[in-house]
Image (tube, rainbow, N blue to C red):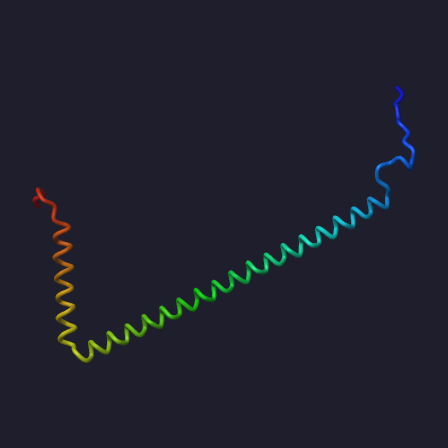
Length: 111
């Protein structure tokens, strides 16, 4: 079996080696530009994440400080007025006990 080939003259080819090299350089430059853009976007995203994390940590630290201040203030009030603190604790305990007993009570159920 014989194969058929078509001979095309060198001058008739649509692209020359010079054109192919020029196209390859343009594509490489475009890819380099796209890579720089992608790197810039990734860097910005990481910086935004770091900034958000630092803000969250600062917020948590403030919350912990406020909670410690609240605890210190409660301890100070209990030391200053122990009978009032005891009365408040007794009242809250009774209220919670009545609420739990009322919620736990089911009509029609006898034990």
